[in-house]
Image (cartoon, rainbow, N blue to C red; front, side, top):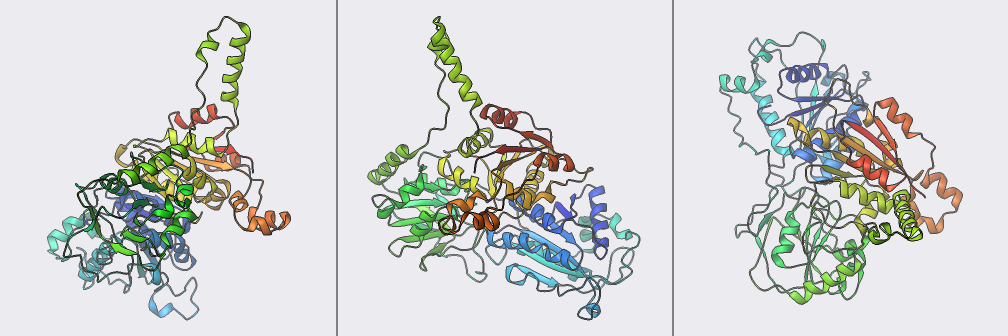
Length: 579
């Protein structure tokens, strides 16, 4: 715990019982926050959400066999998105592996291509009354190395770490007496020197001056820092700044400092500022705008638009990718990865910026409802007054479509809140129409899958609301995404209840496929059967079964009211949508 781990997620199991009981004791003493989940896949994504929000790893504890395998989806997302995560898998001892023993598979190396560090540890020795054994110093050193590796030490990128922990029977017993001594005090009393520099848990989000530093790419462990300092962006080339998932506010700061257009995905956390480009997809594809780009400075992981992927694949465009928390970008085979970037002094290319800003204004979407006709409402002419009242009622009673849904959620969310986007059709609608607003945004875009969206959002909520902090976590997703992760709705009754709104745009299936190439070649029956996958699930029954407050809203006024009403706990909000 002295390394800064504050959250442990446990799934029950026999082989891992000693780890679970120690976690429970640590919770009882206030040393950690413990979260219990019966599904290891959901446990992994809950820990991923905690790591996303805090940038510190949460530890996941599970038993052996398929339990460990169920952590793979979260481990893959953590690997590709650069999220710190600790996987602690209990196992059979070496002599029971490969001999047909129950609930035993080859766990060492199970996550090998995707982890920053892994170790198959020896079976624990018996320790004496004060916690000493020949293994103690070694295990403490491994623990320190594991936390450092999860935070990206030596690899330039945070990510998952796997410690495989074998145990022999008996698996149960009294808690060891040395647990009565706090772990930090124990380290002090025994004078154990871990020889590891401390890593700060809080990373500054705001840039200092005109210097901006990325978090790192994967697989670049031995690349030394640039002795000449940050990469200097000269003023000459026609430049845009592109912000993908997890880019953060640094992207906006560079665009502002350089006087360059800012193309920011809705999941970037950088969609704000005076240089923000609205309707960027059409503008990037426009030969007079995107076609004239000479240099792109990339933050984060762009995934939402084919137009930006095509731009980053061009061989006539210089692409500079600031190393962020996830996988390094190199779509054109010649992208230059940089750790730090600064902007050279000089004049802004006002013609270039102005052209983009004029096109941006023309492409922006005004989602505000029409203003009431005050004169008609106050008129003494019955026909005029009744007509104005009728118009107002039409606005209030208008059914919610996808654009209205994403707009309502965006307007209801503020900097003390958190917004999580699922990989559903709605995130693309939001990316296309929403304006600028500085709010904390999360999304699992490392692999852009629908898996674990609710669990990730619960983890974000638990972490962001710790210590009594205010705010609501809203997760916007489709019906298939919520059904894929429905087990994440289960929160144990004795745990803190997060303030979270799961907002489901329910169009009865996977309508995202209606906009892909397959819709032009598949017949309707096959399309529905294997891609659209219709269902008849009653979401209100699921909410009731899992103890969630349920709302079904069909009008904008009702949606605005439920989104902005004080949320005392868990709410599932269903918004029916046309296919």
